[in-house]
Image (tube, rainbow, N blue to C red):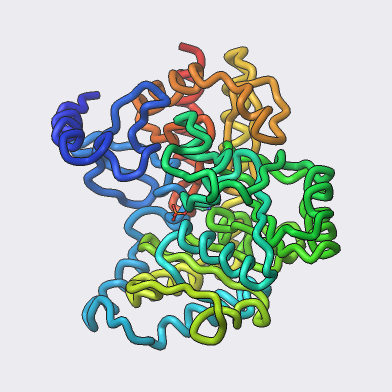
Amino acid sequence: MSIQRSQSIYERAQAVIPGGVNSPVRGCRSVGADPVFVSQGDGASIWDVDGNRYLDLIGSWGPLILGHAHRDILDTIKEMLSMGTTFGAPTEVEVKFAETLREAVPSMEMVRAVSSGTEATMSALRLARGFTNRAKIIKADGGYHGHADCLLVAAGSGAATLGIPGSAGVPEGAARDTIVVPYNDLASVEMFCQGGDVAAMIIEPVAGNMGLVEPLPGYLEGLREITRKHGTLLIFDEVMTGFRVAYGGAQERYGVVPDLTTIGKIIGGGLPAAAFGGAAAIMQKLAPLGPVYQAGTLSGNPLAMAAGLKMMEILARPGTYDRLEHLGRRLGDGLLAAATAANVPAVMNRVGSMLTLFFTKGPVTNYETAKLADTNRFGAFFRGMRERGVFLPPSQFEAMFISLAHTDEDVDQIVAAARETLAA
Ligand SMILES: *Cc1c(COP(=O)(O)O)cnc(C)c1O
């Protein structure tokens, strides 16, 4: 497989873009590879500029649950496009988007749209602090909630991969009020909430940014109980899990209702959109009604709203999540069997169509146990799979995503590639 043209673009890229990429994990550094440059996608496949085809398990890091270039989404965008691209004045499509989102996730009684998950979590935290008049927040070790200063403390995703849990440039003051607790541990949350000065706990209800880690039975229920008891708001960061682990997100799947929800990725239909929402009494503290300021020039962008609406409409069809569960199980079981056959110690963590194969004996229940994984082995696995036409997320600490465009045959082909790679 030649990636010559990619390599020459990469050289140009490095001269004008730091690391040659616009988001760090794409750089493929932690897996000892150079990035390939993508020219197009269709269904479950992407092509690089050298004409190589890959079965894609990144799905743009989650949004593309229908696969690439889905016809109905493209048509919807084209139709809206003919009216213009942005107005900076309210449009009806934003209202429909909020109504549809509330139907799917009833705890989001009121919704505000933004353009990225980072903005959604940052705004939700400001709102939680403004509503409670408290400063402290709790997050989980290895939990990633975008790159706002106060959240870049012991963060997962790219920060985990690059080994910069804090990030330079985050002043001590911005991180001082952030308390970090281990994922799946209730005792520490209880301990810190007791002081009565914690505004909010923000949590990925299924962790996806330290690799996939499922909440242990009783964890989310316990968080709900503890936070309620101490007047702390519970924020579910469903930027990744929203419309992924169930139509109504993790809160539907696990039956635990947060005070505020942040959501992104899938709800933009492949365009930049995200949102936060929750109880009306909290959301009404936002400007222009209340004292908590939050704004955005392109917030509620009509193209993104229309694409997101169409996405929600398609996902609401019967059978969607059964199909995703089926594909996820087939892939998860197949990858684990491939590792077992090759005598490679591995753990498969999976919730629906999100999954991570950890190269460790496991179990993996938090960031500490995730970090025991053999990242060198993962790097070799990534490179071997890419060589065989399968595009994995280039980090041990990320989840793979399967889409409705994948077929059983695609999954079998991925598993066969894994058998070859792990045997090598
Ligand atoms: C991706 C992600 C974010 C950040 O979203 P961006 O759109 O990349 O800013 C926040 N929280 C979680 C759980 C995510 O997976």
